[in-house]
Image (cartoon, rainbow, N blue to C red; front, side, top):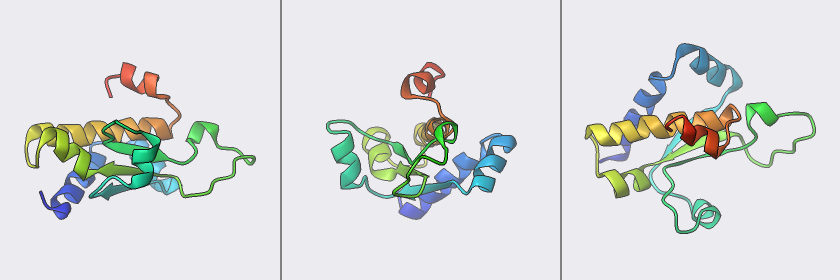
Length: 122
């Protein structure tokens, strides 16, 4: 799949988020960034794992004046990993995984830990 097709699929996934959550994300300026490859820093953080996406930053739940943030809070979704497991777009499985990954990472932004997100099916 082309990167443009992947970007469009991520945008479509974001559009499926309930409006009240989209408004919070927009108001707070959280970026959801499609990436064509998984950065080396992510491979270093999660060796021997396939990472579809990552939430980077301080969650809404844990934000306070004492947190020092070295990089902007954001979500990244990785084309390389999704295609590695599910193949190229436009299969329904790829689109479903993109939606699931976007929701999974947004849940981390709202303060859910990995166990809580997975218990909810994401």
